[in-house]
Amino acid sequence: MSTDLKQEYLSNFLKHIKITHSASEHTDESYRHDIEQFLEYLEGEDLLNLNQGLGYAYVNALLEMKLAQASIARKISSLRTFMKFMQLNYGALSNPFTSISIRQSHKKLPGFLMIRELEDLLTSCDETDLGKRNRVLIELMYACGLRVSEAVNLKIKDLDIKNRTLMVVGKGDKERYLFFYESLAPRLIHYIDVVRNKLLDQEHGYLFVNNRGEPLTSRGIQHIMKVQGQKAGLRMHLHPHMLRHTFATHLLDNGASLKIVQSLLGHESISTTQIYTHVSMKKLKAVYEAAMEDVEVT
Image 1 (cartoon, rainbow, N blue to C red):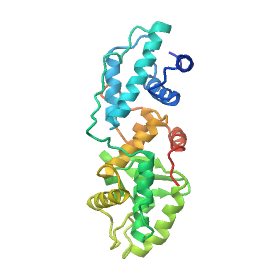
Image 2 (tube, rainbow, N blue to C red; image 1 turned 135 degrees about the horizontal axis):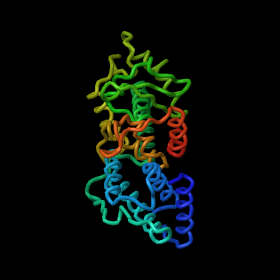
Image 3 (cartoon, one colour; image 1 turned 120 degrees about the vertical axis):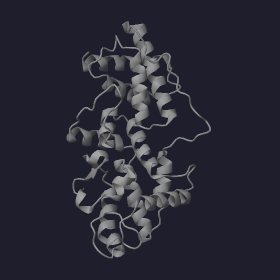
Image 4 (spheres, rainbow, N blue to C red; image 1 turned 180 degrees about the vertical axis):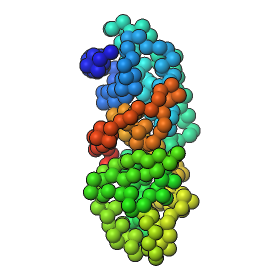
């Protein structure tokens, strides 16, 4: 099925939503984001003749992204409504999401930060040298979706501040290139040129250092997150991987596709039924920039 035809179906669905005033659960934009992500996931699949098992495969893909259940539930609700529209108006043979129910736990808080919480976390970092280091550490881990192991192993030579890119070595010793947003660049430069030099005792090349100038360890970063989260008054215990979850959630909620986020996170596969698909650096950066426009902090 052609991309133009899929986009026509989506456009007509959004018009239908506006006319029927049935967008009480979600905004028009969230419907658009959720459905566009699904359409890209389908690739060449015929939207009018989907396999029932595809719905469960898609849920698995969302689960692999470590999204909060509330986010997954919303996406599945959007797709259930969309496919019902396709059945009624275009003769789609099945709705793969009819029997899928995402249970939401009201006791367990979602493992990601809202935009306001992220801002509170960053502004809670004081103007001391260690406070400035903490802010750059937190912001870079969020902006790039870094694993804690990738953050501790990051070296200055891996950064290209002019182009706002960096290279990390992830699981399986696989390299990947990531991007960070513009407002982070001057803080990163100040940390490297001023703060890090003041803390440093002997040059070793690692980007993040402790108060003795030694490379930060994973345990050190965990302690920083715990203390900084408490200072910010967050509603949950902050751990490093939560920033990675937040990165993925914000990108997906702002319209980035699963494949794009998969590439940025360094995941081998989107689901057990779909192999890894290469995405060009140019497209990765363009989608990253567009999705991060609404969540970039200053």
